[in-house]
Image 1 (spheres, rainbow, N blue to C red):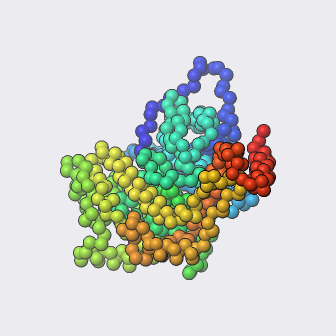
Image 2 (cartoon, rainbow, N blue to C red):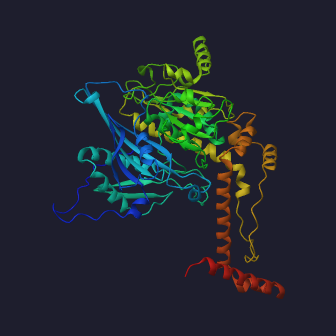
Image 3 (tube, helix red, strand yellow):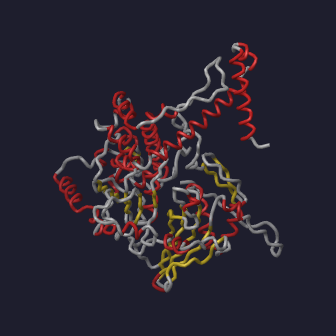
Length: 576
C-alpha cells in the first residue's frame, strides 16, 4: 500500500564514457540471489530470458522451478478476454533452495523467496491472442515490503528498456548497507529512496517487547505488509479459527483464483501469529512442478498430511491433495473487482456506505450462523459437497475438521470500516482495518504466550551479593507441570473472554505441534543471553572495595578466584 515515487535510474555522465563497474557479488548477495526476466514461449513453455548475475540459477533444477513458479497456473481462472488489454499483477512464491545441502542448512531446509511482477498482454494481432512475461527477484530473505516496492520500479522498467534494467537496478541494491532486520531502513534507488521496516530475523535472539507497539507499522513477524482485510474480507468470522490452525501448525490448503490472491492470503495467515516464530513449511504459490508435489501426491489414503500451508490456483490439487484436513477458499474470480463481499451475497450497492461514504461493517452481514431456511440449506449443501464444489463455482468458504477454542471477537469486527462502493477510499479504509485486525491478533498471540513467561524470566544479582558467581539456571520446563499449573491459575482475563471452556486443549495442541519447540528454544536462548549480559554488566559496575569489606577472608579468596576465572573467560571471548 506504499506509494511508489517517480524514480530516475539514468546514470550520470555523458554517453560513451567508461562503463560502470559491475556490482559487488558479495554485497548484492546480502539482499538478493538473482534478478530475472522469464518469458512464456509458445513452443517451449517458460524460459529464462535474462538473469543477473549470470549463472545464479545454475543449481540443479532451480531455473526450471523458478520459471514455472513465475506464471499463473494453466488451470487457473482465466482473465476476461478483450480485444486489447494489459494486466499486471504482483505475487510471491517460496521454493526449496537446491544449492543448500542438508549439512549446510542443518535440520531446517533452506528456502528461496521469489517476488514476481507478471504482465499478461492480450492482443488479437499476437499469436494465440496474447503473451506473458514475468520479472522476478529471487532472495533468501522474506522482505516482502521491500521487494514489492522494488518490483514496481524494476518491472515496468524491464518492459520499457529491456533486460539491461536488471544490472542497473542490481548495482543500486549492491550499494545498499547490509540488512538490519527489525529496524527501519532508507535504501536509495536512483533519484528516490525506499523506506521500509524490515521484519525481525527468524533466529533473532533479542526478546520481543513486553508491551504492544504504539506504532502499528512496526513488524513483529513476517509479512506485516500483507493485506489481511482484503484477503479474508468474506471470511472475517473465520479468522480466529485460522489463527488457531496456524498456532498449532495444522496443514492448510488455500485456494484462490489467482497467484496474487493466494500468495497474499498465505502471507496474511503467517502474519496472524506474530510474534510467534512460525516454523511450518509454507508456500505462497504452489504448483505441480514443485519438487515436493510428487511426495505429497503419493501419500496413501489415511496417511497424515504433513504440516504445510499451500497456496494454489490449480483446482487439480483439490483431488490430488484430498487428505489435507483444512481447506480455505479466498478471493474473487473477477480480477477487476478489488472488493470481496461478506458472506450472504449482497450486491455491491448494498454496502453500509451511502453515496460512497464509509460506514461500519454490520455483523448481520458477516454472521454465517444467523438462522434462515436458505442459509441452513446452503450451509448443509456446502459441507456435503466439500471443497470439490469449487470445481464448478468459486466461493469463499472454510472446510475444516478442526474444532476451534477461540471465539470471534465481535468488538473487533464492530470497529472495522466498510468503504461502501467508492474505490477512491477503499485503500485507506483497508489500511485502517488492517491495523485493527493486526493489533488484535498481536495482542491475542502475546496473551496466549504469556503463561510461558516464568520460564523465560531473567534475574540479576541481589543488592550486596557478589556477581562473581554463575547466574542461576532458568526454571526447567515440563509440559505436564505447565498444563496443571495453568489449569489451576486459569486462562486470565483477556483469554477467558475469548475462549471456550476447552481452552486448555489449545495449549496441549500447541505443545505437541511443530511451532512450540523452535519458538521456546529461541526465546530460551534469548533469555539466557540477556541474563549473561545483565550479570556481566553487574560485574563491571560493582564496587569491589565495598564488596570485599563485607566478606570474610575465605570468601575473599573465593571471590578472587572467581574474578580471575571470569577475566580469563572474557579474554577468551573478546577479540583484540
